Image (tube, rainbow, N blue to C red):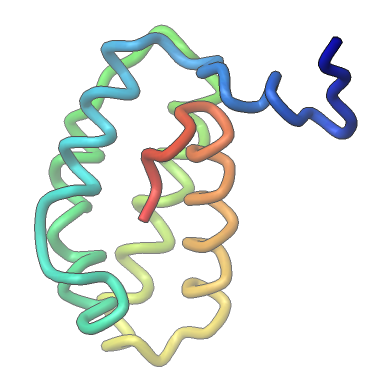
Length: 103
């Protein structure tokens, strides 16, 4: 028998609607490499994320937060460390809702 501790296999199940996860996957897969060009990557996400619609209020709250952090990172030309940290946090939240979706 398989026992999971701390989420384990359970965490692999998406909690967000499949259509939302597919849209997020498309948004995150597009644009420059986030490691090579974090500002360009953030810029490429803002409009598509603003256009995202979902019945999942938790995902939408995180997306709104991510858009704000992306905008701050772009405005600061990558210098805003708090925004960079917020982006990592929001990406992790979205990855929990849609496993494998975040960069």
